[in-house]
Image (tube, rainbow, N blue to C red; front, side, top):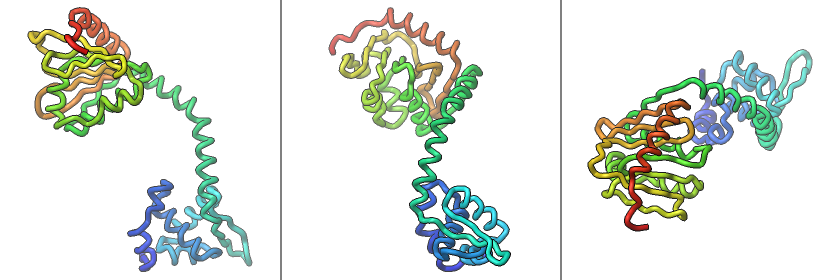
Length: 252
């Protein structure tokens, strides 16, 4: 494919692709058609630097999106570019279709949750992203067991998880140790119990909805996410037993 200087410049400076999620070839063809206003596929191919066989398919895609129109003139099919404002109409239409599809897609999610899954996350950033899943808890409550002090050290510092949890109105019941910051207050959506220092727990657990996230306090840094309703019920039952054994913090 031979690219003109104008097309190369467009490739370097384009932010259109990122903002509309159109693929590069579709973007280049649309830009070429805009500059030509009205042209046959051969002229669009030459201007965009994309093969004519591909251009025909892309032009048909643009027509279906409402970004172009076509007509026959002396046996030659020509294409006209529609105003870029049509993009708004296209995405509004897609949004309406998405709203209609969401209920059916949610049914598929429910089906998939019936099948247990185990995922392993490797590295600090991956473990942080795993913990982000708890912030989408539908039950609006998160259970956690383990030392936040050790977890922070393992992940290389705080990353705003607690602040975002409170902003989302998610309540957390936490089993901690005396060495941790044990603030227990309704205003912080946080209730804490203290486990004895003799309790050997070399890791951190997050339990939410049907998921249990396990983060061992050892390197290499890794996390294990188990998504299974029965396993989550078991983990929550263990949490409740330990909760009864824990003590309230000496201060609020």
